[in-house]
Length: 134
Image (cartoon, rainbow, N blue to C red; front, top):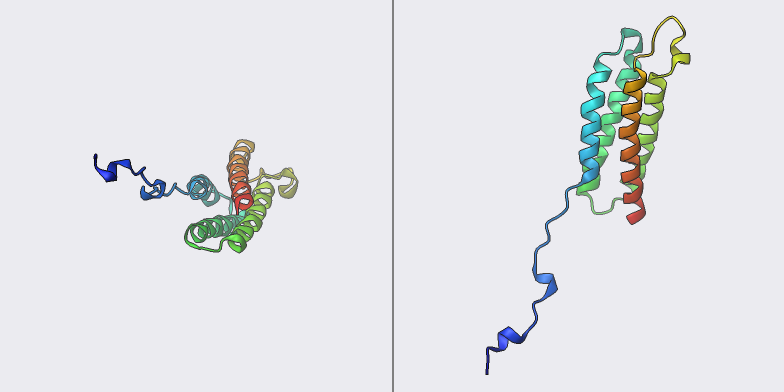
């Protein structure tokens, strides 16, 4: 009689699964790496807007760490979604020519606005998929 242990099929739950990296936090980090230096070069009259942009980016980064570490994530993801909407409005405001008048250019060029908006859009899509999976 062959070894009895060999006849038992392997258990599927025995293997330790590696946790997937949290892609949302990576994308948020890339967005902060892009946007933070841009806000440092805002003119003095737009310093308050730059401060709000930095606060909003850092709040989103903080929420991503909380989402990664918490067990109950729904409230944190909703807070992050609201903060992302606020950041989108501030970025749009920083690129608005109407706000700054015809005499002064806006602090963000059109290319910078488009790039930052793409980051925000990608983060929004990842966050929306994450919220739908909860």
